[in-house]
Image (cartoon, protein in one colour):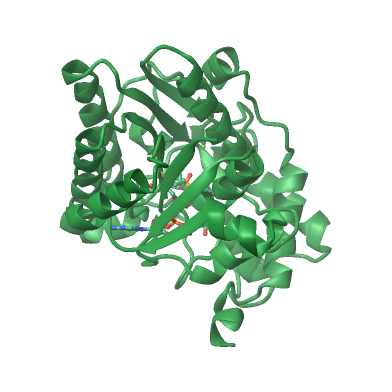
Length: 355
Ligand code: NAD
Ligand code: WQD
């Protein structure tokens, strides 16, 4: 079975996708600096996979290091090659993802996201590995002109984080010009949420969360006093902003579908929205949470957050046509699985890290 390098494989999307890929039979090399994740997450992936220790030793290897370090990357490619089991493809999650932090420290974001990716692509070129699935983001559409958003919509990111993602998509496009053998999928994720249904892996924000689902989780366990709803004057039916939330397991399965597509078609660069095509308002999400966790969640409507837009909803039809992939899970499952993870791991992976 093919061997994959998963950069950032210990993170939120990386862990869930690694699990799906392991279950599909792929052998994995997970590379992570653990700057925003925990090795415990990978222990949990192994646990859920049900593989025994011999199978795990053979099929899942972990390297700790930074994607900006070319020697480190080259060493991984060389070692796999020498073992007679070269890396066939890369799923590239590693990077920094906070919009706020990117505004405060744009140089860090350009360095990690852009230079990191450039270094990775250099190592891939040198080692004749030319298949990559890249984590792009719907954030590159900025304030979209029309809803639902198609892949052909204007790319107009409004923050440094989004600009790094758009720039990486450009680099990837340029690569196909110098070597037509590249097989590239740029996956533009909408709003990934929820957790694996076992509650063993999930989103583990370090510090105070900014995103809606982790914030609601913390309000529901009284770690945060109140949910501040950013804006009650948006042009939507209930006046709160609408997003296309996608269950993390649907997103993980989207990566498997994209990889299978790349491996079975002629080389190409494909750009796809990964979203559900449905939008929910902040108040609708709060209402679903209240049903699932059976308590009233305190909230107040405050001013709009800078950079937010009224509505972001994907047109996911291209992914269905090309990959045969579409989301299967409902908002209720997103909330239920996200809440289950929170209840089982009120401090994320911290408690097990201390053991
Ligand atoms: P995450 O922070 O949980 O995972 C990223 C992983 O990359 C972490 O484990 C982190 O330790 C690792 N990492 C960071 N810098 C690194 C470096 N220089 N070298 C090696 N490893 C490094 O984030 P996530 O939510 O899993 O996101 C994965 C990817 O998807 C990111 O590229 C992100 O920009 C993109 N994305 C995320 C979302 C989202 O809402 N979560 C939406 C769209 C796109
Ligand atoms: C969702 C909705 C908020 C928190 C972000 C990134 C984007 C992508 C996905 C990486 C919005 C509202 C939120 C709160 C609120 N990530 N909200 N109170 O902003 O759509 O997208 O994650 O690529 O780049 O920007 O997601 O979860 O922050 O917000 O009212 O405390 O919830 O205004 O309408 P967003 P989010």
